Figure 1 (cartoon, rainbow, N blue to C red):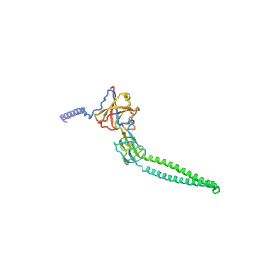
Figure 2: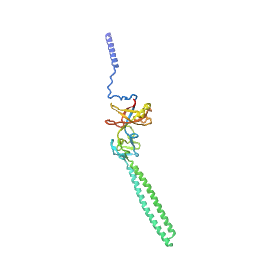
Figure 3: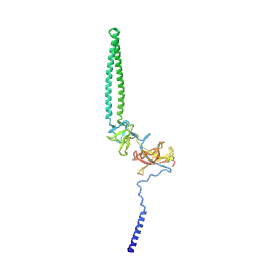
Figure 4: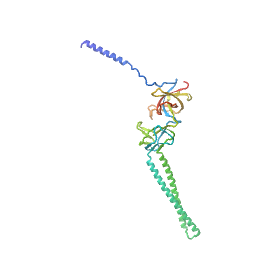
Length: 324
């Protein structure tokens, strides 16, 4: 091979290697973030995850489960509706229970008629006995003692029959009351004043005391979730167990909430602490976790004016002290 060609190829390979090395050492410039990461506004603030909820005087959102099973026949409200306590929300097919109640009512009507017949029989037997006793008193020979005893037995039998029918009437009345109470459970009503946040059941879907099957999560969920009637939102903040010792005294707690994906932040007002450390499953909706991370819930509220947030939304929160 010609030496000039050989040196040329070698020189080209060296140049290519140098260029490749130069290119590979260049670091691409980072893109400008769309929004700034949530900064810690406190000198010794601690970070925590939070979830927005409808503001409640106690507990969390109201979850509604049916007490009976069956397909949904009517959905009587829409998500976002404000309802009063007792307002019908949803109807479950009650055809079988309604037929059962009607049959029990028919049986009650039969027993009522039997009571009327028994009462008439008792009166007839009692009147006959009274006549025989009067005749026996005035004309002892006209009526035998056997006739009197037979008629007394007839009166006793008629009285017993009437008591039996009256007892059956009372039992049937109680059964109908229980059946009607059960029939009423096929209409789901609002347990309190509030706003309908979520409806999981559609017309034709099957519901049970476990709730309604959610095709997305492949699990059972409440058929209806309601928020507070008073309005307003709160934030349930979960402080990691390793940071619990850094939580300030309740009178000194200050906090700021940062809306993810934006540069918006708002101050929070401390309401109360749920003094029970729990597994951190509320934010992930996982009933089981590989790592047992536990958190302490703190509840805050905030001014919602001109703030576009909704229950169930995750937020970043920094908790600090009024002294820092």
